Structure formats: structure tokens, C-alpha cells
Amino acid sequence: MKTNEGYSRIVTDESLRETIPHGSEEYPFRYYLEDIWQFDFHCIEWHWHPEVEFVLIQKGTADFLIGSERYVLGAGTGIFINSQVIHRFEAAESVIIPNIVFSPSMLAPKDSLIYRKYVRPVLDSTAECRIFSAGDPAHGEILGTLAGVFAVQEKENGCEIKTEEQLLKLWRLLYESMDITEKASSPQASVRTQAQLQIMLQYIHKNYSNRISLDDIAKTVALGKSSVLSIFHRNIHTSPINYLVNYRLKRAAKLLGTTQNSVSAIARDTGFENVGYFCRKFKETFDVTPGEYRRTLVGS
Image (cartoon, rainbow, N blue to C red; front, side, top):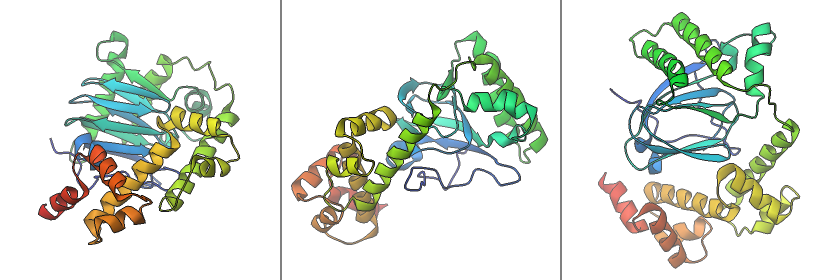
């Protein structure tokens, strides 16, 4: 078994939307065989995409942060992640996850009866994700069908029509397993909240090297501090300031590997006013000092 090469990080825009295309315009489907442990910092960072995603944990146990929830899932478990749902995967060991990401338009044209009756209700439902347990007999057929999709891809010449056949079956089983009568009670509120989060993230990404307070972040969306804290905790499970500090640390780690600037200069350039605080937070996050981190990169 060989995991995909060339992907060590998730590439997103300022709204955390993934920018790498999944498939092509005429065939918007992509299969990946990945090991979370091989990604930068042993995690697949926060991102979202308009496509839907199905994941199978083939080996190991990891934390899957999907929408507003955290799940600790082990081998044999499957996951459906709905369109536009933000998610992050964390590993403390090698965790092999074959997965597929595809546009719902693969299933049926958007103006068709099939799309209106069976696809759109799932996309518009309150379900951010769906977990399929290997120990649940009701989920056996779904997991088996998902494995069948993977099997087609792992042949030298993946057959598109067989993939389409399996995807339609997989979607039918998903649809039948869900209570799709329960729609989002306030879809506009959900869209507005996501937009507000993206505006605040864009502000942090653009201004992280400057002094930023919670008040500054809240002003970008004209909300109170308590509302901003709630949006961050509900959607990405951290506070705005913790997110800012972690973002600064990741930018600093990149500079340590790509420049010869001193540690103090990098701390200053990434928004840390106190070098001692920067070094302490860096070691808490990466388990090594900035100097050790740079030497490790040079040695590799």
C-alpha cells in the first residue's frame, strides 16, 4: 500500500476553502489514500470545500473535528462529511484514511428529479456529517459499498462508469440512513455565521504581524466579543486569540525553514512582541525550541 505523495499540507484561501481541485470539470471526483501522520504537524488542517467527502479509517485512531463536533474514531469506521462543512483531522500515530471527494453533480444534474428529491435534501439537512460504525450491522452495506468505490480506484485504470454506479448506490444508502425530513431551521443564519467567521479569519491572516485584540477582530463583523467567542468555539473549537497565536506560530515555523533570519526577528515579524513568550509557545506547540526546529530542517 502506497499513500499519495506530494500532499503534506492542505492549501486554502483566506476563508479556509481548499484551493486544490478535486478531479476535473468533466469528472469532478478524486480518490486519495492518505496517512494523516505524514501531513505537516500530523494533522489535516481546518478546511472546507463545496464537494462532499467520504472517509474510511483503515488503520489507527485519530480525532476528527467536523463542523461543531469532535469524534475520536478508530479503524473500520466510515465518515460522510457534508458540503461546505469545515473539518480538521488530528493524529498521534500513523492513521491511514482512504477517502473520496466529489461534487454532488456527479450524482445527477442539478435541475433533475433525482437531484431535487435525493441529493439536495441531504445537502440542505442539518447533518454536518454521518458516522458509520463497523460494529453496527445497519452500516455494513454502506461501509462495504465505500470499500467497493476504493477498490475500483486502486486498479491501474479506474473505471469511471463503475465508480458512478458505486457512488449512486452509496448515496442511496446514505439517504436511506438519514432523517432527511429535518431541515436546517435557519439556513440563512448558518450562512451568515460562516461568512462572519471567514471575514474574521481573513482579518487575522492579513494582519497577524500587527498587534490584534479581540475588540479588533469583533469590529470586522460588528459583533460583541461574546458572540465572536461563541462563533469561534462552535465552529473551530478554539478562541480567536488562540487561533491568532497558533497561526503566528505556523508562519514562524515556515520562516525558520525558508529564511536565515534570527529567531528574534522572526518573532517580531510574526507579531510576537516578547521573544521569550514566542519561544515558550513555540516549544509548547512543536515540542522543540525554534533553534532546534531549524536545525532539524537543515539536517533533513
